[in-house]
Amino acid sequence: MAGIEKPLKADLELAGELDQLITLSWWRLLREISTDLGRTSSSVLKQLREVGPQRVTVLAANEAVAQPTMSALVQRLERRGLVTRAQDPADARANLVQITDKGIETLQARQRDRVAWYAEQLSSLSNGDHETVRAALRLMLSALEEPAGEQ
Image (cartoon, rainbow, N blue to C red; front, top):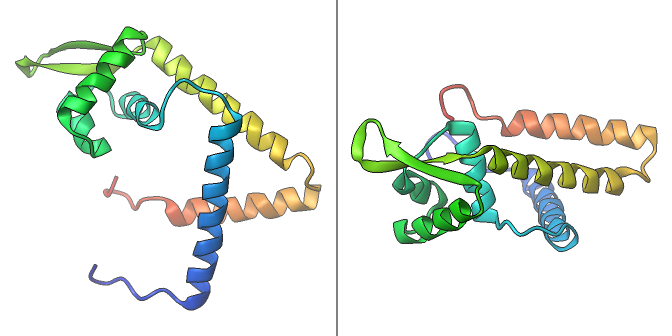
């Protein structure tokens, strides 16, 4: 990677703590919030909501899975009414997968559950601690935003 400097020891230590926080949050969320929608299914629904209808081959590439694996996942989502398939107007031989209203509602419900869980975790913090966490989150979000044109 040309142009990227070697991270400082302090940056690596801080990054390790951030990784620990994200990993712990992820595992606790998975354990404490029941869901019947897996990570890849959620990611596909999110992609369809944000980008719009996609071919199965594109979804497979974006999730780094084989096309037959993605086809099976899309079939399961379709049976649950979370996605539909329609003919691609640009190529009558291909189908586009599209999220349904039920799929959007499912994503929204999952987000509400996660937000409620995080709110519960933060409830014991003081107002000052809330402001500290808020400031740190704003800094991290700013650092993680993709530069324009690279999305």
